[in-house]
Length: 302
Image 1 (cartoon, one colour):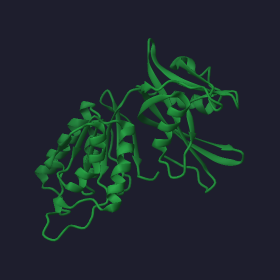
Image 2: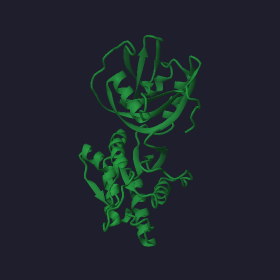
Image 3: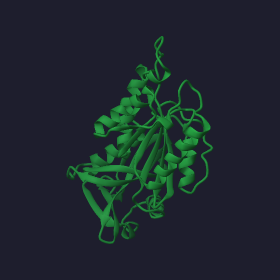
Image 4: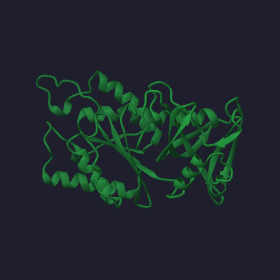
């Protein structure tokens, strides 16, 4: 996803928050009295805040809505007061509401059928997002492939699979719990290595989910698994992708690219030729009706 450059860039995020309606998806629109405009809920990122968290927080603050993040949309890049503003957007399914409270920034919340939204929007850049929203089904399922966080030093005599997370990795696992919660995967699968289990344990505990340990996903001592085990792991991931279940898998640097490409092939698309993921980074493949409808990468700091 391209980004504008410059240290003075204004970073923001928002969402096209939707709910099912009688004739299809309905989108949440907000009115800002300062500008007398109608747009999607969005806002500036706080210092050090991940854009996923910005999008969820801003939707909640402006509308009272709770959402689950879906596929990403193209960013909006424009100038505000002579400074570049870069706004990231996602499709987001509404899961609940704490109640809308009018304020000085947003004084009205309205719902409109997708077919009617364009006539309500104040900016052409938001109309372009609406076109992209309509290019695929509103609802999609995430398959998240996560590289484990930073591991600590292995204790003398301990097996490689027992190596725990280090101090930074433990802190990153807590942050990952919030980032994964943005997508709300309903299954948590992991390599048998403790560093993988510990990476997803905070999310699993917060979500009330059991971690499913999959030996075929395990890499020990940095060695690639045998050909038969590798093929079985690829088959497992491909089956999971094709099923349309929402899930997160925590695996290793050595097998993550192969597993991600198996999932992509199952969803009817080619391999990912992007660079290797950093520790604690993840790929999100969004699917609908057995097809890939969105793919993105996230680092812990984005």
